[in-house]
Amino acid sequence: MPQYHVDYLNQQPNLLPLQVCFSGGKAYVVKNYSDQSSIETGDEIISINGRDIPSITRQLFTLIPSDEHNLTLKSRAQSVSHNTL
Image (cartoon, rainbow, N blue to C red; front, side, top):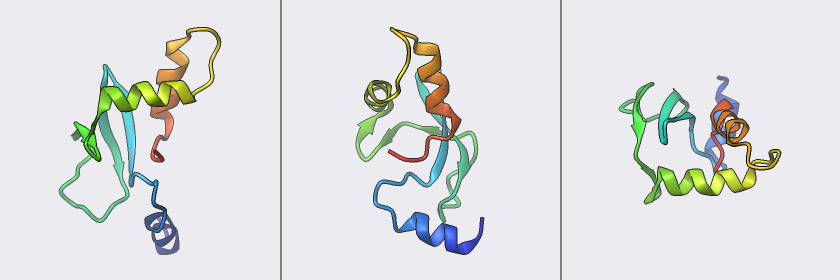
């Protein structure tokens, strides 16, 4: 990623500098865009800013449109490229 993109992304207050995959009620790192080399692809994310993943998932589900109670679409939408929270 070009440095000017990294700089821009790092200036955004609501950016999670990771690409995340939600699976089985858990969240995993797909890509690390941060300068934290200790975070590796496949690491499980337990919480973000003190909020556990199930509560974050519930909130995200309310923001993703779908037909009726179609949870499959919402689950897929969460994992596509969810690096803004």
